[in-house]
Length: 320
Length: 228
Image (cartoon, rainbow over all chains, first blue to last red; front, side, top):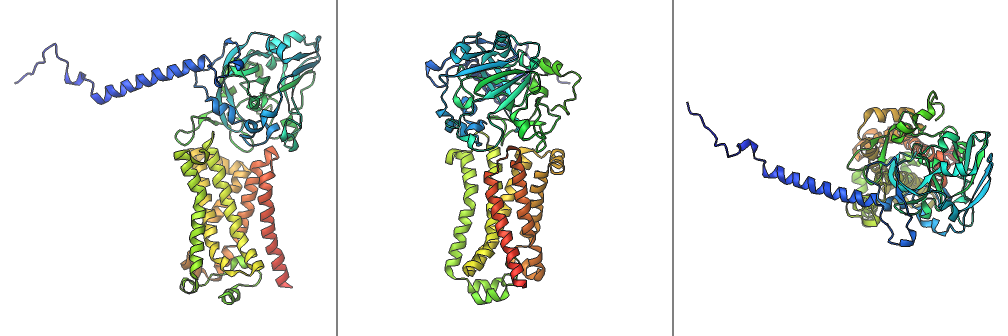
């Protein structure tokens, strides 16, 4: 019987990595390194327009997702902002005429210190943080957006809500001279939204002044907006002019015009369908499309760990 | 030739008019008509070319930020446009007296079906990724999708019986069968209307609804008049 022995210093043929395989591995490592660099660039939130006067000073904040941020161009050209028209590219076309300076935000209602903030004062009210959040639109698409802002709770603290303040109502600018979309009676103007007090004070709820390290472009809700990442995008009201602390649940614009379709809470919930489409999946802009299928939508948009306790014992099908 | 066509039209319903056999038509067809048909054929493919070249080469501004949505809406809109165009043939022919228009009707109808197929394929493939359970649930639970699906299903027998052979074989039944196109138009408009209902955004669908109402209303009036 012939026994073939292999010299100890030579590798077994089975141990040799085929050329095709190691080349593929190298490509993978290179791609990963490149992706890491891209991620780092997004993480440092480099200026997108190259205009230094638009930069916002900020520090990294909590709750950041590791997902790839949606390209700046998509974030700033695919918008729902009906005050400027119903098509996704209407805001970028028409929002330029909105004047964001001077700008004031009136805070009123059940508070000890009602006051009107100038935008410059508002910008300095608390340190700015980078918050990379998922944004899930009720229409079934989503983005990952690096916002800049500070928790709404900081503002709430400043005005000292009274015991009667159980909800907050938010109001967007409604000026027909600057907003051509107001001519259409799509919903009740001015655009109005609302949050329960505990939702407003949640550390995830961001009073937002910028994205991608720069001040908000007008079409994204300049100069100041709300971002509530566990709710459908329309709850994240843009271009705020008024905040009112109230006792009763505010009637939001969407609840007023289509109560069977949009509820006050509007938490992202894959199990509660919109009457005209399922909410079980979503298309991540810039990623899902003709080559990859839509991804499953996560309960509370993936922020269940942070916010599920706010709704303990509530029937989320009824309070949709 | 005009006289021959007019004579064959049954009173009251132009859409159900049988078309003369192929042999007779080719013999009668003037040269310019085949040129017109070719032009219509090329024009009918332009919306598709726009989508394909937009997707592969980024022409015409590409397909935008949400390409699947753009393709879904574009194919749906063009299906409705061609449907309206095919429904406009009979009224226009009668009002203008220009009978060769009827020779374009089949192609218009088939283009409506073609873009309807693309619209459905975009939904089934790129929106739902062949998730049969989700699609069935959509069709059953969501009235706007039910209507879209109904419009498509009703178009299938019309497309299938669009050949000369089928026109001959079915005879008078062909005309009755093809009255289904009225239901297709109503279902298509409802599909679009309910899709837009949430935003109260009827600016565009309103025009199509008005057009379809006009085209179908004209037929009702025409029928009522010819009965008297």
